[in-house]
Length: 212
Image (tube, rainbow, N blue to C red):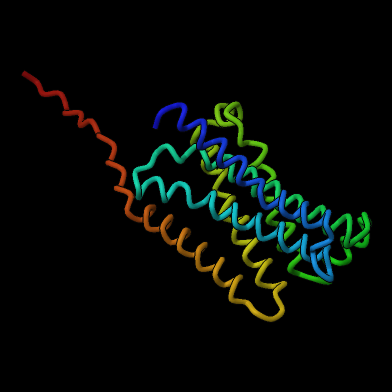
């Protein structure tokens, strides 16, 4: 892909990923968030966090299957947007639902287990966001960086469980997210099992000295 096309693609991903937030802010400004605007905003930002997290995990399989190596650029942007929407999801809950009360937030988490699962997913995403820069990749080294960023799967699993546990009636949508995540995990396991076994280390045989 040409540099100009790649730059445009980056700009396109960056702008479009912000569209859900812009629409949410527009509807909030015009009082169009329904009877319970806080719950609507919490649900919307949570869904966006989960969608962008799954899109982040989709980049590598899609690149390997399609051969579109250029799409790797989008993984960092999508991952940071996932973290951003997850933080916003929690902040709306903390600010508007819990009225900035730390004790109230903690007691609510202890009463509702799905909140503990959700905050676990958010905490797991923190080191992923912090180490997303090129400087941190060089500092950690490629192998350690890749091992650390497998926590993205932990965050996605926590997000899906969190969504399923808090859904009271129709669980079809949480199950749809769980299905997509299961496919992504299954692909990752299949690739891992199909890796060629490492070649055995060569050994040097030392022959005993013989007398002439």
